[in-house]
Amino acid sequence: MIILGIETSCDETAAALVERRADGSGKILANIIRSQLAEHAAFGGVVPEIAARAHVELLDHLIEQALAAAGLSLADCDAIAATAGPGLIGGLLVGLTTAKTLALAAGKPFLPINHLEGHALTARLSDNIAFPYLLLLVSGGHTQIVLVKGLGQYQRLGTTLDDALGECFDKTARLLGLPYPGGPAVEQAAQRGRAGRLALPRPLLGAPGCDFSFSGLKTAVRRLVLRETDDGQRVLSRQAVADIAAAFAAAVSAIVTDRLSHAFALYHRLVPPPAGQRPVLVAAGGVAANSALRRAMQDLCAAQGFAFVAPPPALCSDNAAMIAWAGAEHFAAQKAGAAAAAPQGGLPAGLDCVARARWPLDQAAPAKIGSGRKGAKA
Ligand code: KG4
Ligand code: ZN
Image (cartoon, rainbow, N blue to C red; front, top):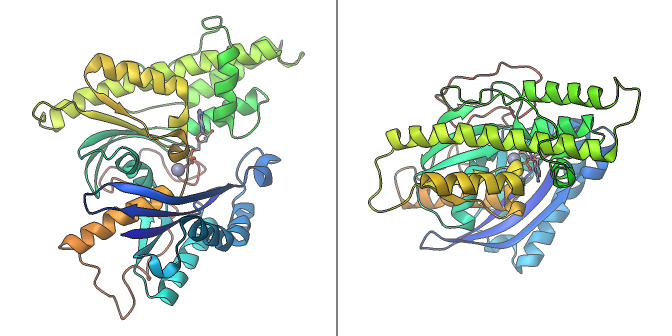
Protein backbone atom coordinates (compact mmCIF):
# COMPACT_ATOMS: atom_id res chain seq x y z
CA MET A 1 0.00 0.00 0.00
CA ILE A 2 1.07 3.59 -0.64
CA ILE A 3 0.31 6.34 1.86
CA LEU A 4 0.67 10.11 1.46
CA GLY A 5 1.77 11.69 4.74
CA ILE A 6 1.54 15.34 5.77
CA GLU A 7 3.28 16.98 8.74
CA THR A 8 2.67 20.57 9.90
CA SER A 9 2.69 20.40 13.70
CA CYS A 10 5.60 22.78 14.32
CA ASP A 11 8.05 24.61 12.05
CA GLU A 12 8.65 21.97 9.40
CA THR A 13 6.28 21.69 6.46
CA ALA A 14 6.59 18.19 5.08
CA ALA A 15 4.99 15.76 2.64
CA ALA A 16 6.06 12.19 1.96
CA LEU A 17 5.04 9.00 0.21
CA VAL A 18 5.74 5.70 1.89
CA GLU A 19 5.08 2.19 0.71
CA ARG A 20 4.26 -0.63 3.13
CA ARG A 21 4.87 -4.06 1.72
CA ALA A 22 2.85 -7.18 2.56
CA ASP A 23 5.70 -8.49 4.76
CA GLY A 24 5.39 -5.40 6.98
CA SER A 25 8.55 -3.68 5.75
CA GLY A 26 8.48 -0.12 4.49
CA LYS A 27 10.09 2.00 1.81
CA ILE A 28 10.24 5.78 1.49
CA LEU A 29 9.25 6.79 -2.05
CA ALA A 30 9.55 10.55 -1.46
CA ASN A 31 10.30 12.64 1.62
CA ILE A 32 10.14 16.40 1.15
CA ILE A 33 10.83 18.74 4.08
CA ARG A 34 10.91 22.49 4.10
CA SER A 35 12.19 23.91 7.35
CA GLN A 36 11.04 27.39 8.30
CA LEU A 37 14.30 28.23 10.10
CA ALA A 38 14.79 31.54 8.32
CA GLU A 39 11.27 32.72 9.11
CA HIS A 40 11.71 32.14 12.86
CA ALA A 41 15.44 32.79 13.35
CA ALA A 42 15.04 36.46 14.28
CA PHE A 43 12.72 35.49 17.15
CA GLY A 44 14.98 32.78 18.63
CA GLY A 45 12.16 30.22 18.53
CA VAL A 46 9.04 29.18 16.67
CA VAL A 47 6.32 31.85 16.31
CA PRO A 48 3.03 29.94 15.93
CA GLU A 49 1.30 32.48 13.68
CA ILE A 50 4.28 32.73 11.32
CA ALA A 51 4.50 28.93 11.22
CA ALA A 52 0.82 28.53 10.31
CA ARG A 53 1.07 31.07 7.49
CA ALA A 54 4.21 29.45 6.11
CA HIS A 55 2.48 26.04 6.12
CA VAL A 56 -0.41 27.52 4.11
CA GLU A 57 2.00 28.91 1.53
CA LEU A 58 4.16 25.82 1.21
CA LEU A 59 2.11 22.72 1.76
CA ASP A 60 0.34 22.17 -1.56
CA HIS A 61 3.61 22.75 -3.45
CA LEU A 62 5.41 20.22 -1.28
CA ILE A 63 2.68 17.63 -1.84
CA GLU A 64 3.06 18.15 -5.60
CA GLN A 65 6.84 17.83 -5.25
CA ALA A 66 6.54 14.62 -3.26
CA LEU A 67 4.16 13.05 -5.80
CA ALA A 68 6.45 14.12 -8.67
CA ALA A 69 9.56 12.77 -6.91
CA ALA A 70 7.84 9.40 -6.44
CA GLY A 71 6.42 9.43 -9.98
CA LEU A 72 2.92 9.00 -8.57
CA SER A 73 -0.45 10.76 -8.64
CA LEU A 74 -3.01 11.07 -5.86
CA ALA A 75 -4.97 8.25 -7.49
CA ASP A 76 -2.06 5.87 -6.79
CA CYS A 77 -2.29 6.48 -3.01
CA ASP A 78 -4.29 4.10 -0.85
CA ALA A 79 -4.87 6.62 1.95
CA ILE A 80 -3.87 10.08 3.14
CA ALA A 81 -2.41 10.58 6.62
CA ALA A 82 -1.82 13.87 8.44
CA THR A 83 -0.63 14.89 11.89
CA ALA A 84 -3.70 15.74 14.00
CA GLY A 85 -1.68 16.58 17.13
CA PRO A 86 0.00 17.29 19.42
CA GLY A 87 1.42 20.58 18.17
CA LEU A 88 0.73 24.19 17.34
CA ILE A 89 -2.94 24.39 16.56
CA GLY A 90 -2.69 26.77 13.57
CA GLY A 91 -0.21 24.57 11.76
CA LEU A 92 -2.13 21.39 12.58
CA LEU A 93 -5.28 22.91 11.08
CA VAL A 94 -3.46 23.64 7.82
CA GLY A 95 -2.20 20.07 7.44
CA LEU A 96 -5.43 18.46 8.59
CA THR A 97 -7.69 20.56 6.39
CA THR A 98 -5.47 20.00 3.36
CA ALA A 99 -5.35 16.24 3.94
CA LYS A 100 -9.09 15.94 4.57
CA THR A 101 -9.87 17.95 1.44
CA LEU A 102 -7.57 15.82 -0.71
CA ALA A 103 -9.04 12.65 0.78
CA LEU A 104 -12.59 13.78 0.11
CA ALA A 105 -11.82 14.99 -3.42
CA ALA A 106 -9.86 11.89 -4.38
CA GLY A 107 -12.17 9.47 -2.57
CA LYS A 108 -9.37 8.14 -0.34
CA PRO A 109 -9.50 7.16 3.34
CA PHE A 110 -8.13 9.80 5.71
CA LEU A 111 -5.93 8.82 8.68
CA PRO A 112 -5.40 11.28 11.57
CA ILE A 113 -2.01 10.59 13.15
CA ASN A 114 -0.46 11.38 16.53
CA HIS A 115 2.89 13.09 15.84
CA LEU A 116 4.48 11.27 18.80
CA GLU A 117 3.36 7.94 17.40
CA GLY A 118 5.08 8.92 14.16
CA HIS A 119 8.35 9.31 16.08
CA ALA A 120 7.65 6.13 18.06
CA LEU A 121 7.16 3.93 15.00
CA THR A 122 9.94 5.36 12.77
CA ALA A 123 12.39 2.60 13.71
CA ARG A 124 9.97 0.05 12.25
CA LEU A 125 10.17 1.92 8.94
CA SER A 126 13.95 2.45 8.99
CA ASP A 127 15.03 -0.82 10.63
CA ASN A 128 11.97 -3.09 10.40
CA ILE A 129 12.11 -3.94 14.13
CA ALA A 130 9.44 -5.96 15.90
CA PHE A 131 7.31 -5.07 18.94
CA PRO A 132 7.88 -4.75 21.87
CA TYR A 133 10.70 -2.24 22.40
CA LEU A 134 11.77 0.52 24.74
CA LEU A 135 11.59 4.01 23.29
CA LEU A 136 13.46 7.15 24.30
CA LEU A 137 11.62 10.05 22.68
CA VAL A 138 13.61 13.27 22.94
CA SER A 139 12.48 16.29 20.96
CA GLY A 140 11.81 20.00 21.29
CA GLY A 141 8.53 19.43 23.11
CA HIS A 142 8.91 15.96 24.64
CA THR A 143 11.20 13.85 26.76
CA GLN A 144 9.73 10.45 27.49
CA ILE A 145 10.68 6.85 28.00
CA VAL A 146 7.91 4.65 26.64
CA LEU A 147 7.32 0.92 26.51
CA VAL A 148 6.01 0.29 22.99
CA LYS A 149 4.07 -2.96 23.34
CA GLY A 150 2.34 -2.91 19.98
CA LEU A 151 0.57 -0.59 17.57
CA GLY A 152 -1.46 1.84 19.68
CA GLN A 153 -0.17 0.28 22.93
CA TYR A 154 2.13 2.72 24.68
CA GLN A 155 3.04 2.72 28.36
CA ARG A 156 4.91 5.77 29.61
CA LEU A 157 7.67 4.78 32.04
CA GLY A 158 9.20 8.21 32.50
CA THR A 159 8.73 11.80 31.44
CA THR A 160 10.17 15.23 32.10
CA LEU A 161 8.93 17.09 35.15
CA ASP A 162 9.74 20.45 33.57
CA ASP A 163 11.58 21.27 30.31
CA ALA A 164 11.98 18.96 27.34
CA LEU A 165 15.57 18.07 26.45
CA GLY A 166 15.44 19.77 23.04
CA GLU A 167 14.07 22.90 24.71
CA CYS A 168 17.01 22.75 27.14
CA PHE A 169 19.47 22.51 24.20
CA ASP A 170 17.74 25.49 22.56
CA LYS A 171 17.82 27.61 25.74
CA THR A 172 21.45 26.71 26.41
CA ALA A 173 22.30 27.74 22.85
CA ARG A 174 20.60 31.06 23.39
CA LEU A 175 22.55 31.65 26.63
CA LEU A 176 25.76 30.86 24.75
CA GLY A 177 24.90 33.19 21.86
CA LEU A 178 24.53 30.26 19.44
CA PRO A 179 21.89 30.20 16.70
CA TYR A 180 18.47 28.49 16.75
CA PRO A 181 17.84 25.54 16.64
CA GLY A 182 20.24 25.07 19.48
CA GLY A 183 20.81 21.32 19.36
CA PRO A 184 23.13 21.09 16.36
CA ALA A 185 24.93 24.34 17.36
CA VAL A 186 25.58 23.14 20.93
CA GLU A 187 26.71 19.76 19.60
CA GLN A 188 29.28 21.37 17.29
CA ALA A 189 30.56 23.75 19.98
CA ALA A 190 30.89 20.87 22.46
CA GLN A 191 33.27 19.08 20.10
CA ARG A 192 35.76 21.97 20.50
CA GLY A 193 35.31 22.10 24.28
CA ARG A 194 37.73 20.90 26.93
CA ALA A 195 36.02 18.04 28.68
CA GLY A 196 36.07 18.32 32.44
CA ARG A 197 37.13 21.99 32.73
CA LEU A 198 33.66 22.96 33.90
CA ALA A 199 31.05 20.97 35.78
CA LEU A 200 27.27 21.17 35.60
CA PRO A 201 24.71 19.48 37.88
CA ARG A 202 22.87 16.30 36.87
CA PRO A 203 19.31 16.61 38.21
CA LEU A 204 17.62 13.37 39.38
CA LEU A 205 20.77 11.33 38.74
CA GLY A 206 20.40 8.11 40.71
CA ALA A 207 16.84 8.94 41.83
CA PRO A 208 14.33 6.09 41.64
CA GLY A 209 12.22 5.83 38.50
CA CYS A 210 12.80 7.13 34.99
CA ASP A 211 11.65 10.76 35.13
CA PHE A 212 13.77 13.68 33.94
CA SER A 213 14.29 17.23 35.09
CA PHE A 214 16.23 19.79 33.08
CA SER A 215 15.29 23.20 34.43
CA GLY A 216 18.07 23.12 37.07
CA LEU A 217 20.61 22.33 34.38
CA LYS A 218 19.49 25.31 32.34
CA THR A 219 19.76 27.60 35.38
CA ALA A 220 23.25 26.25 36.10
CA VAL A 221 24.30 27.06 32.52
CA ARG A 222 23.09 30.62 33.08
CA ARG A 223 25.21 30.85 36.26
CA LEU A 224 28.25 29.47 34.47
CA VAL A 225 27.83 32.03 31.69
CA LEU A 226 27.70 34.82 34.29
CA ARG A 227 30.82 33.45 35.99
CA GLU A 228 32.75 33.16 32.74
CA THR A 229 31.82 36.73 31.73
CA ASP A 230 32.43 38.37 35.14
CA ASP A 231 28.68 38.94 35.56
CA GLY A 232 28.19 40.10 31.99
CA GLN A 233 31.16 42.52 32.00
CA ARG A 234 32.94 40.63 29.21
CA VAL A 235 31.73 38.73 26.17
CA LEU A 236 31.93 34.98 26.34
CA SER A 237 35.08 33.78 24.58
CA ARG A 238 34.78 31.19 21.81
CA GLN A 239 36.64 28.73 24.03
CA ALA A 240 34.36 29.41 27.02
CA VAL A 241 31.32 28.75 24.79
CA ALA A 242 32.86 25.43 23.73
CA ASP A 243 33.78 24.46 27.30
CA ILE A 244 30.28 25.19 28.63
CA ALA A 245 28.77 23.27 25.69
CA ALA A 246 31.06 20.32 26.48
CA ALA A 247 30.04 20.40 30.16
CA PHE A 248 26.39 20.54 29.06
CA ALA A 249 26.82 17.60 26.66
CA ALA A 250 28.52 15.54 29.39
CA ALA A 251 25.72 16.27 31.85
CA VAL A 252 23.04 15.38 29.28
CA SER A 253 24.67 12.06 28.42
CA ALA A 254 25.07 11.19 32.11
CA ILE A 255 21.43 12.05 32.90
CA VAL A 256 19.96 10.22 29.91
CA THR A 257 22.00 7.05 30.43
CA ASP A 258 21.19 7.02 34.16
CA ARG A 259 17.44 7.32 33.49
CA LEU A 260 17.65 4.69 30.75
CA SER A 261 19.43 2.21 33.00
CA HIS A 262 16.47 2.51 35.40
CA ALA A 263 14.11 1.98 32.46
CA PHE A 264 16.04 -1.14 31.43
CA ALA A 265 15.42 -2.65 34.87
CA LEU A 266 11.73 -1.77 34.62
CA TYR A 267 11.54 -3.21 31.12
CA HIS A 268 12.89 -6.55 32.34
CA ARG A 269 10.14 -6.65 34.97
CA LEU A 270 7.33 -5.65 32.57
CA VAL A 271 8.21 -7.65 29.46
CA PRO A 272 8.73 -11.42 29.55
CA PRO A 273 12.24 -12.13 28.25
CA PRO A 274 12.04 -13.17 24.58
CA ALA A 275 13.70 -16.49 23.80
CA GLY A 276 17.28 -15.87 22.72
CA GLN A 277 16.59 -12.30 21.66
CA ARG A 278 18.11 -9.11 22.98
CA PRO A 279 15.63 -6.41 24.05
CA VAL A 280 15.79 -3.25 21.92
CA LEU A 281 16.18 0.42 22.82
CA VAL A 282 14.98 2.81 20.12
CA ALA A 283 15.91 6.50 20.17
CA ALA A 284 13.67 8.97 18.34
CA GLY A 285 12.96 12.69 18.08
CA GLY A 286 15.20 15.59 17.04
CA VAL A 287 17.64 15.27 19.96
CA ALA A 288 18.27 11.63 19.01
CA ALA A 289 20.23 13.08 16.07
CA ASN A 290 22.95 14.09 18.58
CA SER A 291 25.96 11.91 17.89
CA ALA A 292 27.53 12.17 21.37
CA LEU A 293 24.24 11.10 22.93
CA ARG A 294 23.91 8.28 20.42
CA ARG A 295 27.39 7.04 21.35
CA ALA A 296 26.56 7.18 25.07
CA MET A 297 23.37 5.18 24.48
CA GLN A 298 25.22 2.71 22.27
CA ASP A 299 27.78 2.10 25.06
CA LEU A 300 25.05 1.75 27.69
CA CYS A 301 23.17 -0.76 25.56
CA ALA A 302 26.32 -2.76 24.87
CA ALA A 303 27.04 -2.90 28.62
CA GLN A 304 23.48 -3.85 29.59
CA GLY A 305 22.58 -6.36 26.90
CA PHE A 306 20.21 -4.21 24.82
CA ALA A 307 20.35 -3.74 21.07
CA PHE A 308 20.39 -0.06 20.10
CA VAL A 309 18.44 1.26 17.13
CA ALA A 310 18.37 4.89 16.09
CA PRO A 311 16.86 5.91 12.77
CA PRO A 312 19.08 8.05 10.50
CA PRO A 313 19.24 11.65 11.85
CA ALA A 314 17.00 12.96 9.03
CA LEU A 315 14.23 10.62 10.20
CA CYS A 316 14.75 11.54 13.88
CA SER A 317 13.73 15.16 13.44
CA ASP A 318 10.26 16.08 12.21
CA ASN A 319 9.33 14.69 8.80
CA ALA A 320 6.28 13.40 6.96
CA ALA A 321 7.64 9.92 6.18
CA MET A 322 7.04 9.00 9.83
CA ILE A 323 3.44 10.26 9.57
CA ALA A 324 2.84 8.32 6.35
CA TRP A 325 4.37 5.23 7.98
CA ALA A 326 2.22 5.48 11.13
CA GLY A 327 -0.74 5.87 8.76
CA ALA A 328 0.36 2.77 6.87
CA GLU A 329 0.61 0.75 10.09
CA HIS A 330 -2.89 1.78 11.17
CA PHE A 331 -4.35 1.30 7.73
CA ALA A 332 -2.86 -2.18 7.50
CA ALA A 333 -4.26 -3.02 10.95
CA GLN A 334 -7.70 -1.71 9.94
CA LYS A 335 -7.69 -3.75 6.76
CA ALA A 336 -6.49 -6.83 8.60
CA GLY A 337 -9.26 -6.91 11.09
CA ALA A 338 -11.41 -5.72 13.83
CA ALA A 339 -11.22 -1.94 13.65
CA ALA A 340 -12.27 -1.73 10.01
CA ALA A 341 -12.50 1.76 8.52
CA ALA A 342 -16.25 2.00 8.82
CA PRO A 343 -17.66 5.11 7.12
CA GLN A 344 -19.06 7.59 9.63
CA GLY A 345 -22.13 9.55 8.57
CA GLY A 346 -21.41 8.96 4.92
CA LEU A 347 -17.85 10.32 5.14
CA PRO A 348 -14.65 8.27 5.13
CA ALA A 349 -13.54 7.57 8.71
CA GLY A 350 -11.61 10.32 10.45
CA LEU A 351 -12.86 13.34 8.49
CA ASP A 352 -14.66 14.58 11.60
CA CYS A 353 -11.52 14.52 13.74
CA VAL A 354 -10.25 17.76 15.22
CA ALA A 355 -6.72 19.10 15.74
CA ARG A 356 -5.38 18.50 19.23
CA ALA A 357 -2.75 20.74 20.84
CA ARG A 358 -2.17 18.03 23.45
CA TRP A 359 -2.43 14.35 22.79
CA PRO A 360 -0.36 12.06 25.02
CA LEU A 361 0.82 8.72 23.66
CA ASP A 362 -0.09 6.98 26.89
CA GLN A 363 -3.60 8.28 27.64
CA ALA A 364 -3.69 6.53 31.00
CA ALA A 365 -0.52 8.09 32.45
CA PRO A 366 -1.17 11.14 34.66
CA ALA A 367 0.16 14.51 33.44
CA LYS A 368 3.34 15.44 35.30
CA ILE A 369 3.48 19.02 34.10
CA GLY A 370 0.52 21.31 34.34
CA SER A 371 -0.98 23.36 31.58
CA GLY A 372 0.64 26.66 30.79
CA ARG A 373 3.73 27.79 28.99
CA LYS A 374 5.54 24.48 28.82
CA GLY A 375 5.77 24.37 25.06
CA ALA A 376 2.90 23.67 22.79
CA LYS A 377 3.72 20.00 22.54
CA ALA A 378 4.50 19.28 26.18
O1 KG4 B 1 11.64 16.17 16.78
P1 KG4 B 1 11.96 17.59 16.44
O2 KG4 B 1 12.50 17.89 15.07
O3 KG4 B 1 10.73 18.52 16.67
C1 KG4 B 1 9.86 18.35 17.73
O4 KG4 B 1 8.93 17.49 17.59
O5 KG4 B 1 10.09 19.02 18.76
O6 KG4 B 1 13.03 18.10 17.54
C2 KG4 B 1 13.55 19.40 17.52
C3 KG4 B 1 14.53 19.54 18.66
C4 KG4 B 1 15.07 20.96 18.83
O7 KG4 B 1 14.98 21.34 20.19
C5 KG4 B 1 16.53 20.84 18.39
O8 KG4 B 1 17.39 21.76 19.04
C6 KG4 B 1 16.84 19.41 18.77
O9 KG4 B 1 15.67 18.69 18.46
N1 KG4 B 1 17.97 18.88 18.02
C7 KG4 B 1 19.13 18.47 18.59
C8 KG4 B 1 20.00 18.09 17.53
N2 KG4 B 1 19.33 18.27 16.35
C9 KG4 B 1 18.09 18.74 16.67
N3 KG4 B 1 19.50 18.42 19.88
C10 KG4 B 1 20.76 17.98 20.14
N4 KG4 B 1 21.64 17.63 19.19
C11 KG4 B 1 21.31 17.66 17.87
N5 KG4 B 1 22.19 17.31 16.94
ZN1 ZN C 1 8.69 15.87 16.58
